[in-house]
Every structure is written in structure tokens, then in C-alpha cells.
Image 1 (spheres, protein in one colour):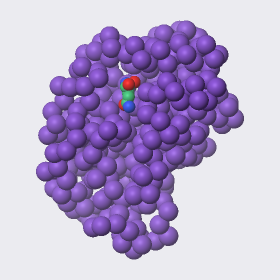
Image 2 (cartoon, rainbow, N blue to C red; image 1 turned 60 degrees about the vertical axis):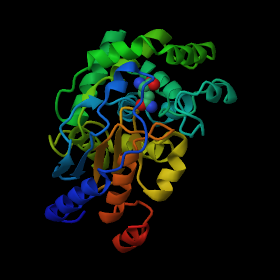
Image 3 (cartoon, rainbow, N blue to C red; image 1 turned 30 degrees about the vertical axis):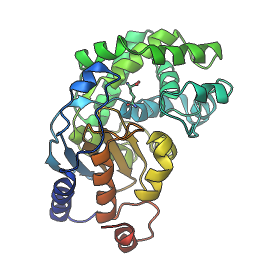
Length: 321
Ligand code: GLN
């Protein structure tokens, strides 16, 4: 990573460069998300020693949505181990949208990967806890350890989604018919919907990502959240599946394991170096934030973070700016 002053300048420039972009749409299939302010745009870069550099709406809270899948997967991976998560949840991209029913049918009932809804609901069903309430509390406290502060539920987003998530309930029921989910599938959907409704800022996303970049130790609190092995496994899954069916485009352009969510957040992780959290609710047709993708691509180049680049100079020259 460059020096702190240099990172600050680069982050400010990235924010300024993309703040005028107005294409895309806010998610509206969860009614509460349709109320998002499309002008919001925040960026935070965290380095692996806990330095934080922000621009724009970096302290505005939004529901984490699908980005929760990455961190719950890490918590479940810690509890179950490498082989069990690979066998029961899978690590391959479905190539289909995040809420696809067809993906389950095409794969003989296997959820295939934990970063789309079916696989994420199955992952949540494996979360340790004797009751759904205990599973939920373990998720909330586990994700709070990643963020380095106690993060809380947005009740309005949770209620809005739970009243409109017939499709996720159908996915869970289908998984149950194939014996690919444990416990009561509707309980798993409820806990999953809660985890998606946790409120975070780009600062939180950057710290959570930097914890994965730093081998499982939160660089701000100095406390271990998960093992280095689980970080490695989680980042491998994010590289191939973090931006749904656009993960190949993302890896080609940005070269970082990442995870997006439909409220407009993206977290991108540079192993050993740090992480980038962005927030802008205007989405492309796959449900990925447009300004978030643009800003992260720019930052990956300017900070020399692309994991496939052999050196910083080639990272900088790989792209259009
Ligand atoms: N809670 C959302 C859902 O299950 C999350 C989807 C997303 O962010 N892609 O539909």
C-alpha cells in the first residue's frame, strides 16, 4: 500500500471522479430499499494495519444485504471446516442470477455456492446455535467482531423483506426437498433475512474486509475473529462468485475478491494489504452498484492492488485511466 497521505488523495480523487454518474436503478423488489437516496456515494479504504481513509457518505448506514453472505460463510467455515463447507455448500459459480431457482434444478438440488441466495440460506442453516434466536445472535455478534463495533438490525428493512420474500422461501423449500438444508428451512430464511438487514457503513465494510485481508485479525481492534485458513477459503470463494454471474468480468477488470449487495455496497479485499468498502445504491442489471464498481476498479489500479498484477506499475497501466 502507498503512504497514508497518498491513499487519502487517491480516495478523494476516486470519489470526485465518479460522483456525477447517474446511471442504474435502486433495488425495489424489497420495498424499503426503493426509498434509498440515489445520490449517496461513500468510499473507505482500510489498510491491513488499521489505517482508514474515507470520502463522501462513508458514515451513512445501509443494510448489508448480500455482503453478509461472505462473513456468515466465514463464521460457518470456522465452525464446520474446509471439507464440510465444500461438500455441502459448494464453491462454484452458478452462472445465474442471485435468486435463481433454475440453478438448484440444474445442479440436482445442490446449492453450488454460498454467495447466491440458495447457498447463503443453506449456509445460515449450518450456523452454530441451538435455536434460530441463538443462531441469529451468533451471526450478529460474529459480524460485529468483523466490524469492530456492535452492529444492529434495521427493523424496517427486515419487516419489508420478510413480507415480500416468497422467492427465498421457495428456494429454501426446494433445498429441503433435496435434503440440502439443515433444520427448519423457514427458520433459516428468517435468520438469513435478519443478517441481510444488519446496518453498516463503508467504514464497517472496509474494516470487515481488512480483517479477511489480515488473516482473520481485525486490524482496528487487534482481536482475532477467524483463522487464517478460513480467510483463505472465503477469499477464494469471493474471487469466483462475489459479483454473482458478473464475477468473471469483475476479476478481469479489478482483480480482487469482493462481495456486493443490492442495497449498493461492495467490499473488495486485497490479501495482505487491506480492503475497500463502497456504497452507492444505483445498480446494474445484475444487482451490483455501478459507482461502487467504477470506484473500486479505479482504486485497485491506483493503489496497485490487483492480485494478478506482477507489480504496481503493471497494475497502474492496466486500464483506461
Ligand atoms: N436480502 C436480499 C435477498 O435475499 C439480498 C440479495 C442481494 O443483496 N443480492 O434477496
